[in-house]
Image (spheres, one colour):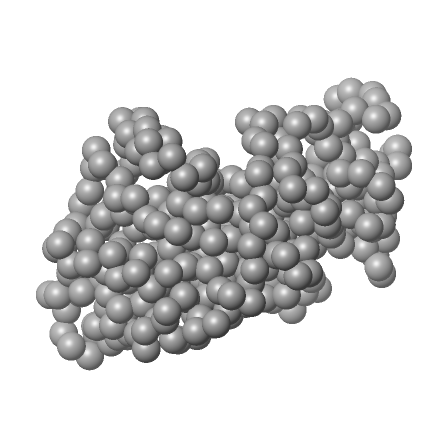
Length: 361
């Protein structure tokens, strides 16, 4: 086998599934890897390291360089790096968590084949091998195509925004700091109440800024724009093509040079549990703070930029009114924290993100 230092279309990526003891092999499943989130992350990391006031995202092809497993060695990987420029060793590192969604799908296939029990926990490894059907060609890159975007980073001061701001959720090391006015949260909460038993939503607009003191990049949400022409039900909100056309026009007409930093939608969890006994309402997992598969699909499709945010406004019997925020972290959609400007006591809460059953070895 050739040395697949650069993972490309001449290679197959395979998830190797083990039982929870991490020693009993269940099966091997080839996976299709979506490299776009990794490329977006790498490009945005380059912007964060730069001192320039403007930057271009989404141009050119990038390479995924395999990082071999520390103990198992080739062909097993512990992750990969995606250099934008400079030394590969200085490039962002993506661990095995990057393949977690594909690992869950691989587990589902093994459940269908009867090799794994429904709900059974498992661990996994990932390895890379050259395709047998064609001769490997050195230097062939994986294709990552996205719209080119020029970012004009505004000069601003985090110190000024920090005055009177409160942290909502957990801020992990490496996350881009994000600031949201309490007014925006209040408006989304009012929208939740007005929508009754249906979901509703919109977009978050604002600016990416470079801190005047330390040069770091942060996001400043300035407003929310309700989404017109949506299709809503109690458990689902669909943004139609007419929605995106209208929102684009509204943001342009505001004339503030704002970006669509993300989107927001509501979870009317009280309506979901209204027919259940009170003791069940307090324990129902659907009443908690979560990001559904449909939510993740919209975020991956429309808000694929590494800075893109998703705010969920949830009202449940168990937790009351909450504002969990999600965003990209090393190419995965994860629960993240944000700072509330002029925070009210209702926003001053911090919870841990839920963990899945699949783990990497």
